[in-house]
Length: 289
Image 1 (cartoon, rainbow, N blue to C red):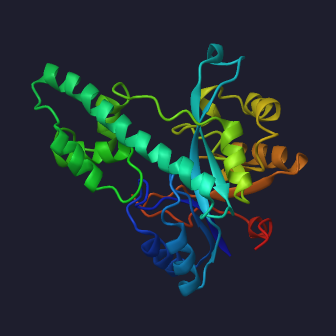
Image 2 (image 1 turned 180 degrees about the horizontal axis):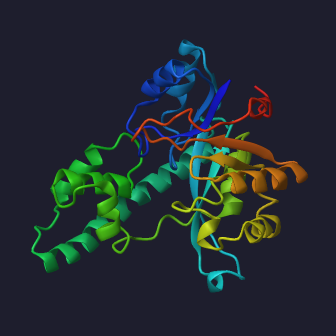
Image 3 (image 1 turned 90 degrees about the horizontal axis):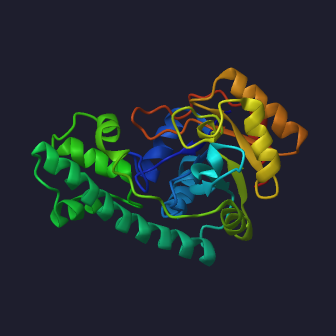
Protein backbone atom coordinates (compact mmCIF):
# COMPACT_ATOMS: atom_id res chain seq x y z
CA UNK A 1 0.00 0.00 0.00
CA UNK A 2 1.26 3.46 -0.91
CA UNK A 3 1.04 5.91 2.00
CA UNK A 4 1.25 9.71 2.08
CA UNK A 5 0.39 11.50 5.31
CA UNK A 6 1.65 14.98 4.44
CA UNK A 7 -0.12 16.76 1.57
CA UNK A 8 -1.29 20.38 1.17
CA UNK A 9 -4.42 21.59 -0.60
CA UNK A 10 -5.71 24.96 -1.84
CA UNK A 11 -6.94 25.55 1.70
CA UNK A 12 -3.35 26.53 2.53
CA UNK A 13 -0.65 26.75 -0.15
CA UNK A 14 -1.30 23.77 -2.41
CA UNK A 15 -2.56 23.91 -5.98
CA UNK A 16 -5.32 21.26 -5.86
CA UNK A 17 -8.61 21.24 -4.00
CA UNK A 18 -9.18 18.33 -1.61
CA UNK A 19 -11.35 16.49 -4.11
CA UNK A 20 -8.68 16.80 -6.81
CA UNK A 21 -6.05 15.45 -4.42
CA UNK A 22 -8.14 12.37 -3.65
CA UNK A 23 -8.81 11.76 -7.36
CA UNK A 24 -5.09 12.04 -8.14
CA UNK A 25 -4.24 9.84 -5.17
CA UNK A 26 -6.58 7.13 -6.45
CA UNK A 27 -4.89 7.27 -9.85
CA UNK A 28 -1.53 6.82 -8.11
CA UNK A 29 -2.77 3.83 -6.08
CA UNK A 30 -2.31 5.62 -2.78
CA UNK A 31 -4.17 3.65 -0.14
CA UNK A 32 -3.75 5.76 3.02
CA UNK A 33 -3.63 9.54 2.94
CA UNK A 34 -3.92 12.73 4.98
CA UNK A 35 -4.27 16.35 3.86
CA UNK A 36 -2.35 18.49 6.35
CA UNK A 37 -2.93 22.15 5.51
CA UNK A 38 -1.07 24.89 7.32
CA UNK A 39 -3.11 26.03 10.34
CA UNK A 40 -6.33 25.11 8.53
CA UNK A 41 -8.85 22.25 8.74
CA UNK A 42 -11.40 23.84 6.40
CA UNK A 43 -11.20 21.07 3.80
CA UNK A 44 -11.32 18.09 6.17
CA UNK A 45 -15.05 17.35 5.96
CA UNK A 46 -14.90 17.41 2.15
CA UNK A 47 -11.73 15.31 2.17
CA UNK A 48 -13.34 12.62 4.34
CA UNK A 49 -16.34 12.45 2.00
CA UNK A 50 -14.18 12.38 -1.13
CA UNK A 51 -11.96 9.65 0.32
CA UNK A 52 -15.02 7.48 0.91
CA UNK A 53 -16.17 8.03 -2.67
CA UNK A 54 -12.87 6.96 -4.22
CA UNK A 55 -12.14 4.19 -1.70
CA UNK A 56 -9.03 5.57 0.02
CA UNK A 57 -8.38 5.25 3.75
CA UNK A 58 -8.18 8.76 5.16
CA UNK A 59 -7.14 10.36 8.45
CA UNK A 60 -7.84 14.02 9.27
CA UNK A 61 -4.72 16.18 9.37
CA UNK A 62 -3.34 19.66 9.98
CA UNK A 63 0.13 21.22 10.09
CA UNK A 64 0.55 23.69 12.94
CA UNK A 65 3.34 26.24 13.04
CA UNK A 66 4.80 26.46 16.54
CA UNK A 67 7.14 28.99 18.16
CA UNK A 68 9.91 27.04 19.90
CA UNK A 69 13.16 27.81 21.70
CA UNK A 70 15.83 25.89 23.59
CA UNK A 71 18.28 27.60 25.96
CA UNK A 72 21.34 25.79 24.59
CA UNK A 73 20.85 26.81 20.98
CA UNK A 74 20.83 30.20 19.24
CA UNK A 75 21.13 31.86 22.65
CA UNK A 76 17.56 30.84 23.35
CA UNK A 77 16.20 32.74 20.35
CA UNK A 78 12.91 31.30 19.07
CA UNK A 79 12.52 29.50 15.76
CA UNK A 80 9.50 28.15 13.90
CA UNK A 81 8.81 24.41 13.91
CA UNK A 82 5.98 22.46 12.28
CA UNK A 83 3.88 19.80 13.99
CA UNK A 84 1.35 17.52 12.33
CA UNK A 85 -1.97 16.82 14.02
CA UNK A 86 -3.75 13.59 13.04
CA UNK A 87 -7.03 11.79 13.72
CA UNK A 88 -8.71 14.70 15.53
CA UNK A 89 -12.37 15.69 15.35
CA UNK A 90 -12.53 18.47 12.72
CA UNK A 91 -15.68 19.82 14.40
CA UNK A 92 -13.94 20.40 17.73
CA UNK A 93 -14.88 23.92 18.81
CA UNK A 94 -11.67 24.85 20.64
CA UNK A 95 -9.49 23.76 17.71
CA UNK A 96 -11.67 25.51 15.15
CA UNK A 97 -11.76 28.73 17.20
CA UNK A 98 -7.99 28.86 17.58
CA UNK A 99 -7.44 28.25 13.87
CA UNK A 100 -9.98 30.98 13.02
CA UNK A 101 -8.04 33.37 15.26
CA UNK A 102 -4.78 32.40 13.56
CA UNK A 103 -6.34 32.93 10.12
CA UNK A 104 -7.38 36.45 11.11
CA UNK A 105 -3.87 37.14 12.32
CA UNK A 106 -2.48 35.91 8.98
CA UNK A 107 -4.53 38.59 7.19
CA UNK A 108 -3.14 41.28 9.47
CA UNK A 109 0.36 39.91 9.01
CA UNK A 110 -0.02 39.97 5.22
CA UNK A 111 -0.95 43.68 5.31
CA UNK A 112 2.18 44.43 7.36
CA UNK A 113 4.35 42.39 4.98
CA UNK A 114 3.00 44.45 2.06
CA UNK A 115 3.95 47.62 3.94
CA UNK A 116 7.48 46.29 4.32
CA UNK A 117 7.60 45.32 0.65
CA UNK A 118 6.56 48.81 -0.35
CA UNK A 119 9.53 50.18 1.56
CA UNK A 120 11.86 48.09 -0.60
CA UNK A 121 9.90 48.81 -3.77
CA UNK A 122 10.21 52.57 -3.22
CA UNK A 123 14.01 52.24 -3.24
CA UNK A 124 13.86 50.32 -6.53
CA UNK A 125 11.30 52.49 -8.31
CA UNK A 126 8.64 49.76 -8.26
CA UNK A 127 5.02 50.83 -7.85
CA UNK A 128 3.66 50.30 -4.36
CA UNK A 129 1.17 47.55 -3.61
CA UNK A 130 -2.23 48.91 -2.58
CA UNK A 131 -5.26 47.73 -0.62
CA UNK A 132 -6.67 46.58 -3.94
CA UNK A 133 -3.61 44.35 -4.40
CA UNK A 134 -4.12 42.92 -0.92
CA UNK A 135 -7.76 42.23 -1.73
CA UNK A 136 -6.74 40.44 -4.92
CA UNK A 137 -4.24 38.30 -3.00
CA UNK A 138 -6.88 37.41 -0.42
CA UNK A 139 -9.36 36.51 -3.18
CA UNK A 140 -6.87 34.02 -4.61
CA UNK A 141 -6.76 32.06 -1.36
CA UNK A 142 -9.10 29.14 -0.65
CA UNK A 143 -8.24 28.88 3.04
CA UNK A 144 -5.52 30.58 5.10
CA UNK A 145 -3.34 33.36 3.73
CA UNK A 146 0.43 33.02 3.80
CA UNK A 147 3.64 34.29 2.25
CA UNK A 148 3.47 31.81 -0.68
CA UNK A 149 0.30 33.57 -1.86
CA UNK A 150 2.08 36.93 -1.74
CA UNK A 151 5.01 35.39 -3.62
CA UNK A 152 2.71 34.08 -6.33
CA UNK A 153 1.16 37.55 -6.66
CA UNK A 154 4.61 39.11 -7.12
CA UNK A 155 5.19 36.63 -9.94
CA UNK A 156 1.82 37.57 -11.46
CA UNK A 157 2.77 41.27 -11.29
CA UNK A 158 6.11 40.37 -12.99
CA UNK A 159 8.07 41.87 -10.10
CA UNK A 160 9.90 38.53 -9.84
CA UNK A 161 10.13 35.49 -12.08
CA UNK A 162 9.50 32.72 -9.54
CA UNK A 163 8.10 32.11 -6.07
CA UNK A 164 11.60 31.27 -4.82
CA UNK A 165 12.95 34.57 -6.15
CA UNK A 166 10.17 36.39 -4.28
CA UNK A 167 11.32 34.81 -1.03
CA UNK A 168 15.03 35.25 -1.68
CA UNK A 169 14.78 38.86 -2.78
CA UNK A 170 11.95 40.22 -0.64
CA UNK A 171 9.85 38.00 1.58
CA UNK A 172 12.55 36.78 3.95
CA UNK A 173 13.73 40.25 4.92
CA UNK A 174 10.24 41.78 4.79
CA UNK A 175 8.72 39.12 7.01
CA UNK A 176 6.52 39.74 10.04
CA UNK A 177 6.43 37.28 12.99
CA UNK A 178 3.85 34.50 12.83
CA UNK A 179 1.13 33.96 15.40
CA UNK A 180 2.86 32.75 18.60
CA UNK A 181 1.45 29.26 19.12
CA UNK A 182 3.53 27.29 21.61
CA UNK A 183 4.01 23.54 21.78
CA UNK A 184 2.06 22.91 24.99
CA UNK A 185 -0.99 24.71 23.60
CA UNK A 186 -0.74 23.01 20.19
CA UNK A 187 -0.54 19.64 21.90
CA UNK A 188 -3.54 20.33 24.11
CA UNK A 189 -5.64 21.55 21.18
CA UNK A 190 -4.99 18.43 19.09
CA UNK A 191 -5.18 15.93 21.93
CA UNK A 192 -8.35 17.47 23.41
CA UNK A 193 -9.89 17.08 19.95
CA UNK A 194 -9.10 13.36 20.09
CA UNK A 195 -5.97 13.56 17.94
CA UNK A 196 -2.23 12.92 18.06
CA UNK A 197 0.62 15.39 17.56
CA UNK A 198 3.67 14.52 15.45
CA UNK A 199 6.90 16.47 15.00
CA UNK A 200 7.10 17.27 11.27
CA UNK A 201 10.23 16.88 9.07
CA UNK A 202 12.65 17.34 12.01
CA UNK A 203 15.78 17.59 9.84
CA UNK A 204 14.41 19.34 6.76
CA UNK A 205 17.33 21.55 5.59
CA UNK A 206 15.00 23.91 3.71
CA UNK A 207 12.01 24.08 6.04
CA UNK A 208 10.90 24.91 9.55
CA UNK A 209 12.80 22.21 11.39
CA UNK A 210 15.29 21.45 14.14
CA UNK A 211 18.02 21.94 11.55
CA UNK A 212 17.58 25.67 12.30
CA UNK A 213 18.91 24.96 15.80
CA UNK A 214 21.52 22.30 15.04
CA UNK A 215 22.56 20.13 12.11
CA UNK A 216 23.59 17.34 14.49
CA UNK A 217 21.06 14.50 14.55
CA UNK A 218 21.98 13.41 18.12
CA UNK A 219 21.60 17.00 19.32
CA UNK A 220 18.23 17.23 17.57
CA UNK A 221 16.90 14.16 19.34
CA UNK A 222 18.32 15.44 22.62
CA UNK A 223 16.12 18.51 22.13
CA UNK A 224 13.11 16.30 21.44
CA UNK A 225 13.90 14.19 24.51
CA UNK A 226 14.36 17.19 26.81
CA UNK A 227 11.64 19.55 25.61
CA UNK A 228 9.02 17.74 23.50
CA UNK A 229 8.27 14.22 24.71
CA UNK A 230 5.44 15.20 27.08
CA UNK A 231 3.66 16.98 24.24
CA UNK A 232 4.11 14.78 21.16
CA UNK A 233 2.88 11.35 20.10
CA UNK A 234 5.14 10.76 17.13
CA UNK A 235 7.80 11.86 14.65
CA UNK A 236 7.68 12.22 10.88
CA UNK A 237 10.57 9.92 9.98
CA UNK A 238 10.07 9.74 6.20
CA UNK A 239 9.97 13.01 4.27
CA UNK A 240 10.85 14.09 0.76
CA UNK A 241 13.78 16.15 2.08
CA UNK A 242 15.06 13.65 4.63
CA UNK A 243 18.12 11.65 3.70
CA UNK A 244 18.57 7.99 4.65
CA UNK A 245 20.65 8.81 7.74
CA UNK A 246 17.95 11.14 9.05
CA UNK A 247 15.18 8.61 8.52
CA UNK A 248 17.14 5.84 10.23
CA UNK A 249 18.13 8.06 13.17
CA UNK A 250 14.58 9.15 13.86
CA UNK A 251 13.18 5.66 13.39
CA UNK A 252 15.53 4.32 16.05
CA UNK A 253 14.70 7.22 18.37
CA UNK A 254 10.93 6.82 17.91
CA UNK A 255 10.98 3.03 18.36
CA UNK A 256 12.85 3.22 21.68
CA UNK A 257 10.36 5.76 23.02
CA UNK A 258 7.14 4.22 21.77
CA UNK A 259 6.33 7.07 19.40
CA UNK A 260 4.28 6.97 16.21
CA UNK A 261 6.39 6.92 13.06
CA UNK A 262 4.84 8.72 10.10
CA UNK A 263 5.86 9.99 6.69
CA UNK A 264 4.79 11.92 3.65
CA UNK A 265 5.82 13.79 0.55
CA UNK A 266 4.84 17.31 1.72
CA UNK A 267 3.30 17.66 -1.73
CA UNK A 268 1.98 21.08 -2.79
CA UNK A 269 1.29 19.84 -6.35
CA UNK A 270 4.13 22.00 -7.71
CA UNK A 271 5.09 19.43 -8.98
CA UNK A 272 2.78 16.56 -8.06
CA UNK A 273 4.99 14.30 -5.95
CA UNK A 274 2.35 12.69 -3.71
CA UNK A 275 3.01 9.03 -3.05
CA UNK A 276 6.67 9.19 -4.09
CA UNK A 277 8.21 8.74 -0.62
CA UNK A 278 8.71 5.07 0.21
CA UNK A 279 6.84 4.44 3.47
CA UNK A 280 6.35 0.89 4.82
CA UNK A 281 2.85 -0.53 5.04
CA UNK A 282 3.01 -1.01 8.81
CA UNK A 283 2.85 2.77 9.29
CA UNK A 284 -0.87 2.60 8.50
CA UNK A 285 -1.36 -0.08 11.17
CA UNK A 286 -0.40 2.46 13.89
CA UNK A 287 -3.66 4.33 13.25
CA UNK A 288 -6.71 2.60 14.73
CA UNK A 289 -9.69 3.59 12.59
